Length: 113
Length: 114
Image (tube, rainbow over all chains, first blue to last red; front, side, top):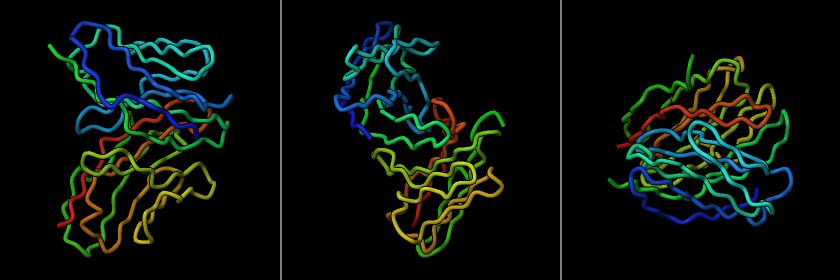
């Protein structure tokens, strides 16, 4: 699986947009970009995923560069409850075969009042 | 159920004892995954079940670890002759196994070996 690179930590002011970058320069054509987060003492939570188009849902937006070598997760109005470790993962789509996710170190986002 | 359920939520056991951890996936999810997370560390893949296929056991750290999934639903992770280094949070996740949807994780079982 392609590896990802994320900054180990970031701070964000409450109410501001949090922009979390991820590099995945070796991503291949059938690999999707997934984002999960893990709030302290909880299991990871799925946020969003995409292939090449930008995606938006009720939690966040995902911006993928045209060459797909990097992406940015955007939390438009960060709250204190968004403080968590955010994981960027690339995963191939293999139809019914599925595939396990490989978690890296992630980015520890601290939202400050 | 509405989510992935794991039991027990906490388990303290003596070194050398066997433990069983249970995972109830979301109904209809054909894929089930076990991970563990040691204190302050990232998630470590253990084992993966997909439908009736042979499980992917490539992440199991030793032969003391085993897992079963009965009837394509409930899964049990067994650790024999527990060691202190087995202390961790054991997380279970399930997914549809098809398409590109994400996993849903349970809240985990915190295992402490004393």
